[in-house]
Image (spheres, rainbow, N blue to C red):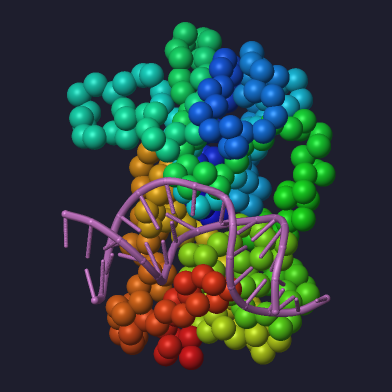
Length: 288
DNA sequence: CACTTGACCTGTCCGC
DNA sequence: TGCGGACAGGTCAAGT
């Protein structure tokens, strides 16, 4: 999925649009995608749209929350009925919703404006999920409860990073960064980018890192994720924001998906290897 | 126990 | 043009 910056971009988009709207209907096109009773939410108002790691949550009035995991190919696209006239009449994917990867359709009512709006949960590979759970039970939810620290929180210092990496001293750096119990929200793209920004080979073991390299790794994690948010996320194939638009982070990426191309810093050819079964990119010179 | 591989799905791309 | 295999922003479960 979408990693932290992509989910955060979606959250920012949906928050502005959905607050105060009333959920009127949920159409479930793929049963395995949805768990919980959709009817429990009908007539409830959206209070808050939040994110924790790669999970997006929508708190509803009366104590229930919708949580979403987009996994590899999930999308959440908002289709407001207000149409811009005279703008750019280019192909807008919102005009083609629902499509064959639409799994759940949410209908919201904007009562003051008397508008009906839709949110489409699309997911080509059907790995993603949506659940209804009581807001008070979020703290006990199996996935959320075990998450490591949020790397974009102010409290995520290099000391905190060092502390949470201690439990995986023999792991390759990139695998430790991708472990959600260690650090929350880093996935395959930003793990490679963070290692590049730190000047650290992703295959190095945690216990081989110097104090200074741990500091640089902290910088790399925070900087790559911040840049991810700044550029609206990474769209290798599926990711789009809540307006159906792709993100541009990969235009600025140093290594991800750039094997056989020259390093943007030293012109050395970027290499690709496999770690934990996932494609891993690095510059043999900058990260040597 | 730690570590690796497969499963979950659908689609695209690349080589033969 | 067809067909097979590898691969794709993630996470779990089973196997070694």
